[in-house]
Amino acid sequence: MQKLELDEIKRKWKRKDLISLEQLDRFDIESILFLAKEFKKKLQQDDPLPSLKGHTAVALMVEPSTRTRVSFEIAAKKLGISFLSIDYKSSSIQKGESLKDTAKNLEALGIDFLILRHPTAGSPLFLANLLKISVINGGDGAHEHPTQGLLDLMTVEEHFGTVSGLDVLIVGDILHSRVARSTFWAFSKCGARVKFVGPKTMLPSYFRDFGAEISYDLDRSLPFADCIVLLRIQHERQKKDLFPSLNEYIASYGLTKERMRRCKPHVLILHPGPVERGVEIESELADSSKSAILKQVENGLAVRMAVYYLLSRSCVR
Ligand code: CP
View (spheres, helix red, strand yellow):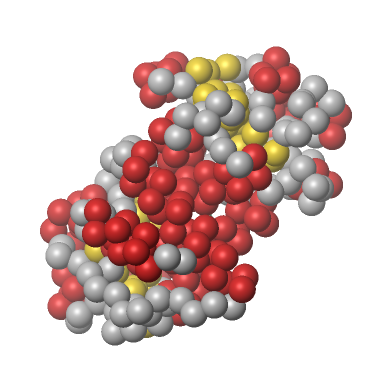
């Protein structure tokens, strides 16, 4: 990693928080990706990493998480950041303490980064406007999951060399998915064409206002795709059943080996996880050479290191 390039990117970075990819411009996104790729190289070559020793990160996950929480923790440790994770079920949130008070108290304890996953869209922005410390959105309701969008982008860019000009399908429960929104912004801002595909009940026509195409027909969309991002049905956010039966959903929107015959030979499959095998994707396909699912997880580590690095106030190298 060239110290000059690092310094230059850090000098130009003006943001305190990472709340959404809609807010970022292409330069911001490319800066994060450039650093993530450099960090990944350093990890692979076992080269020394910059040190953020003296910084503390706290993850407050008010919804379940495996990948996001653990990779923020490992990314922190790689950079020398002290990391704590709050189990909200045993925190004072259970005694009725507000999110604002919880966050203000964490800030008073001297932390530098607060990673928040919360069922309410807008919670990370609300805290970012209140606090001096950096707030990182770890997923807020059906709004955004910016580090997921970035790691999806990195995975596809690494595979194809560029995302510019690619056709990307985002398939499934678009309405309830924060990943759909962040991944849309990441790809579209970097020059890919994005199409949302799903049943009408999970894909309202206002998604066209994003600037994306929309389709209710997966079979007709598959032949044009370079990359397919599959989404889990977010049962926890649905207030009523949005399709007649799971079997009917699978029949129209589940990606199977049979359906893959319609795709270009080079098509790449992504999924943010957790995967519901046999629903949005046939199990064998999730483990096949067409799948980049574990590569996405691997790249999540480098992306989260880059995010800490850019948001940190000072860095010792
Ligand atoms: N992709 C993702 O956010 O996974 P987790 O819910 O396990 O963090």
